[in-house]
Image (cartoon, rainbow, N blue to C red; front, side, top):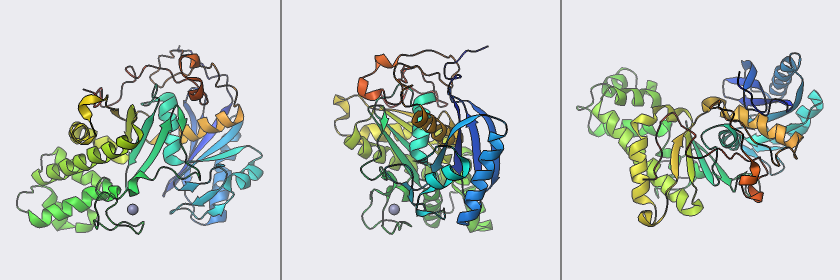
Length: 375
Ligand SMILES: [Zn+2]
């Protein structure tokens, strides 16, 4: 039986609010999910808060819970207690943490969902041992998080970083944010569809699979289907993936020229198709970053915790808020299950706030099994 430190820490609940479902999980101090409740996401404010309360109460009926962390796909204020704006949620400048805390009689913290995912990967997954890290969650759009000196960087007002809306093409594709040419218009699941439709319009004959699908029902095309067609050898779909890889590499080089990270984690739905684009993206990254031959390049890995990362990270951040002193000198266990103890003293004092996730960067194997762009 594996012994992991963290078991003695209070259990917390992490919540992820998706467009379709609310998922709330009990997570222990080793990042293990012990119990999960799932319910449809109500879209009215009162009903949503009722639903969240119900989910947590159900978990509280089976476990002793110390705090609750909520991963929010939107702008969270710098105190992590209010939602400023979330495009798919009914809250706007709403003190959500206070409201839920009153209902539940428990401390509640909010966190941007990509930040929560980054924190989980840092503590228990693909970013273990990183010092300065970037997480890019690629799905419908791009969600991003920054780890600086072992701490999440939230900016002055809680909204950093919005990497998906960096303009990479002047006068480019229109973005729902109101701008044009945003990175996520070229590097997301949605972008795969858009690029596929553009390429099919100019070169329909060469496509063996995609053209048939689009002919049958143009509205049915998804990023997953494009990736599936590439997997099956469709020449146009392969070109779409190559284009995606180029934009991913270029964008990551852009981000790295600013932040100089040692680790980049690719997460989100599109990361499951990483074998179709990651090596290419690494090549474009190395070719695009400034002075590649004269600097170490960040390792680029795929997520280790997958879709559960946001929930696990929110729960872990809630636990940290509950017991702020526990991090000093405390080791962490990793999802890899070795239970290796690490010592926060290995790391610089300023990086110790969240605990010393000192597992070697060389060690944390990712599903892609690659060492990253450092060559
Ligand atoms: Zn945009």
